[in-house]
Length: 500
Figure 1 (tube, rainbow, N blue to C red):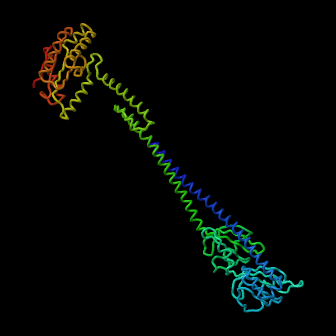
Figure 2: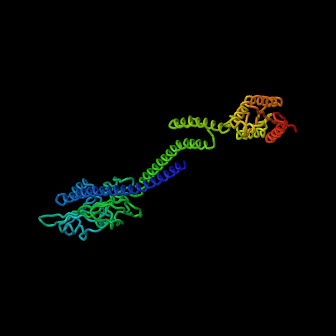
């Protein structure tokens, strides 16, 4: 079964390796795909915000053009104030003459500390007939603004300029973009054509130069950049048409990575759990089959030691029942055949009595019982046929074989089948358990008399010894019986009891 455990080990290693590879590959592709998706999403969002910004600036521009085209509004301060109140996108409306002198101001404005702004770029652009949207600059009152300037055309010539100013730290741009969220902490940032911040949720950054401006190229793209704090951000940007401004949609990578890591590690944990379950299932399955198989192999190995032990079928699953039944039936047949062979190996083929091998085994059993203090009285008889060689020489070996067979039958009928042993040739032994001295002598005499009557002229000489009367040793018991036989052989056809 070592092979099966090696299979479990290899399976566990492969599953662990598979989980690791799956985690690495999934993490790599998941990061790449989520990065691409977020960057693409931010880029699309920046394009949408850019279009919205264009629409709002067009609205402001149309408002300023309306003022520039309507002399009544320009000349009437009260009417100008009412008209300006309708368009909240414009914080301040200023009317200039062609020399740059301020004629009227409407809206949330500080009184400028100068009366002529002809030097301003937005005035110069408009006085030369252009509609102009400025970059971020600081007004005379110290406020960061963006202005839209439109020329006043009268009788085919430039008669003045109307300027609409949008305060960058005012409420209008904030109302446009503060409510737009991209993820948990995503936000919008707007830069002018020189890289100065037009809008940012952090009002302190408005009017400052952006750290990402130099990395912005093309009409719209997306990339990972670092912000003011040095942290990486997913940045999607789009250039505003006609303005060369940039709208940036920014999502901090930390927010995305936190969610992404949760997904990645949940996936990895799921893979590990599934891997462990597969390994446990494999171990359970292998054990379910390896344990019964191990028991079967152990039982088969026990056969080599002559142990014919049946297997309990109820300890095995249904799929092993038939195998166990076949095994038990085979064990039954083997046990019977083994016993038959074992008995045949202990039987003398001529006389049917037990042979010398069986005699030695029996003596070993008696010695074991004696060492365990479980042996009672034992009587031993050793027998030898008188004149047996002469019979073989005169009547032939067939006659001698018949005498041996008849002697064995006489001994079996007198002492019992399991007590008679043939030493070899014409020598026999009888060993009887739990027998009295009188009974042992009676059996010996009965054997001698029957042999005298039936053995074709042959007789037997018998020597007898008793345990524990004569000795406490099984070996000496046989030796003493042999000495008594030696005495009987001197006169023949006699039973001699060993006497110390």
